[in-house]
Figure 1 (cartoon, one colour):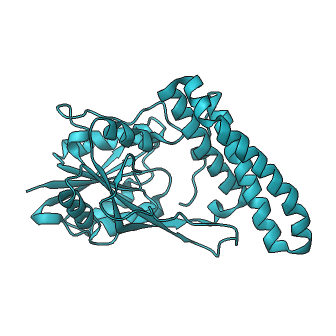
Figure 2 (figure 1 turned 90 degrees about the vertical axis):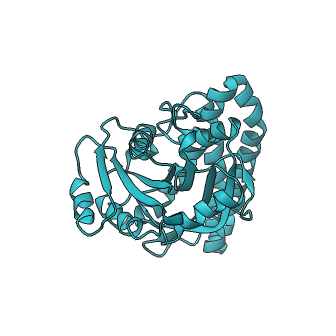
Figure 3 (figure 1 turned 135 degrees about the vertical axis):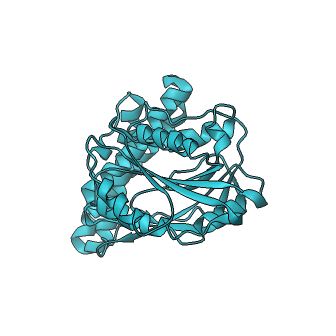
Length: 313
């Protein structure tokens, strides 16, 4: 009888966490297995403990709350792995605190692992804005691959993996605590893949992510774009060395810089005549330049402070 543990890391978003937990405790469990949930609050004070206790009072699903005072996403994620192993988890699923899952979420991920002899299964995220989004905003796209497609990475926003990835007598993997600014989940699953873990796409399994209004401003969107580019470039430096990372990215940095400048130059006069079309061009140009600058920043050893600000509540 397999035991499944769902791990949720949270920080300063008690209301969102409550909604996420309400969906998790309603999950169907595969193959007559058992379910437990571990919640890791990444803060110096327990803002969300009462939320967990309130949800626990309404369900038979065991919820375990832990405070991780070392600030940084990989510290929280590693603590969740430790506590999931303490639950004797055979399978560990991860979801973000601003997301909700459908009742068959675990079942579908587990079925995919069995059907395709996979160690990891991952699905998409469907973003729902709290307010009408700007016309230039684009939600996350689907994974774009059929169920069973072999991947080399995954994200912790919608994933299930076998506990052998993290057990001492297995792959003994942990999230790299140098990556406190992003990309630690991509790195984790790429290392798992490098050790032989099979990672598959599950096309029809998505979770719903709430997008607060604060994340829909131009400034915040570009900051996230910068963070992702910087994190991936910095990860490249750690894994390939600075020279190797620069050689892999120099062409794309030049291309994005030139394309970005061209779009800004073209977008300004278009904006004067057709506002919406011009804004789209200007935003694309700014995004392209931001990706280039972020990559340069990451290659130089710089890291983003994007997660220092918490969106939502």
